[in-house]
Amino acid sequence: AASSMSLLRASRLPSHGLDPEHPLSQEIATVCQQHWDSWGASTEGMELLESDGPLEVYRSCLEQEGAAVDPILARHTVTGVSAREVAEMFWNLQYRLDWERTLDSAPIVLDTLASDTLLLHQIYKRLWPTAQRDSVFWSHIRHAEQRTMVVNCSTEVGAPPLASGRQRMQLNVSLICETELPEGGRLPTERSQLRCRMQYSARVHPGGWAPMAVLRQVAKREYPRFMRRFSGYCVDRVKHMPTRA
Ligand code: 18C
Image (tube, rainbow, N blue to C red):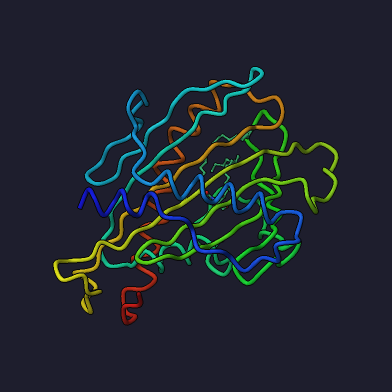
């Protein structure tokens, strides 16, 4: 298993559907490759925020110009869903408001860059006593073998001006999912036999003043909550559907 893992880790991502001439093309390729290679990354030295059976949420404290940008790394394993299903429910906007609690309104699609890549504008709930935040990011989904990945990463390309009173967060997030295949390597037809390993990573720069202690407290509460809520949602959403690779 270890050798097949390193093989996968070393593999190049297949090329994606975006026009190579597009101004975001190179950036998307580079950022996605970095996330893809982070599968199985070590959590050594990170603070364990939460551990609950297969769910583990880690954080490292990192400050940039006085702002907390604490990288988060979370792992979870859930039964009853495939990697592809979980990633699809993270990426496809049709599901977003069902599981995402931080938004103030539905995401706005600024542009469809390719069938697997959107440019999005999201406006978040205001966290007292700080200014309301928004973010502009490309969102890309990629599938290779039994692994599927979604990357959400902030960009200035195509971004609308900031509304007054708001501040723009910078985010770099990925969710990588892998379907655990039983002996023989066949996708099980019974959902009870299907397991999905998830690795979520997030780096969010608040983009303006926010008290560090408040951010850290909210992050500590909200990331584990997101992992539970989102994975529970996925399992529930597909439980009566036939399995899909
Ligand atoms: O990855 C997730 N969602 C994706 C799709 O929406 C996408 C978005 C990532 C944004 C994550 C940061 C959201 C912060 C919102 C701030 C205020 C809302 C608080 C409301 C609480 C109910 O990739 C899942 C994201 C899960 C996020 C958990 C919340 C973490 C809070 C972290 C605080 C640090 C952010 C700094 C922002 C400054 C705000 C004052």
